[in-house]
Length: 161
Image 1 (tube, rainbow, N blue to C red):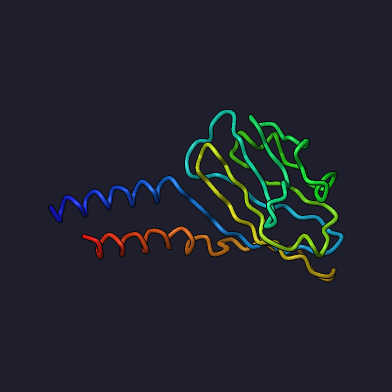
Image 2: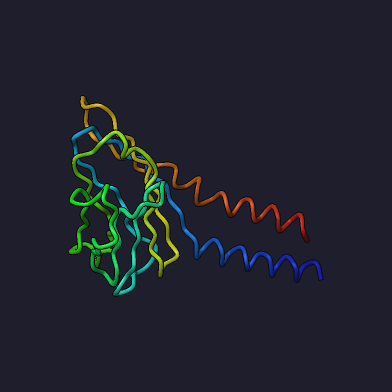
């Protein structure tokens, strides 16, 4: 009985882990500058017509991509005319956005959700006063975020069974 329970919990754990991916990437920009917020889905082929939702930490709509087309009608006024995407890259599973005329109050967390893929990319944007170059951290702590649920659920599985 105990072995069956462990097997079942392990299967649930694997399904949860494989179907829910969340990555963090940190980017830095400067007041008045421009920046690309990355959202590249590289786990498996994307659907032909994707729905992608970019929101900020205050749940304001940065940009919606509906059926593989940018939809500016629901875009919050704060981002209107300052944020665009790259429709020609959607086929390459690249749903990154480009933000222009950065302001200090743009600093914060941005979420890119690919609804049909159960994928989430978190981008931590820091906007500083001018005086340097824009950087993107390659790992941005993504490995730690992807492994944490696996470790926690594994521990729970061992404790419960």
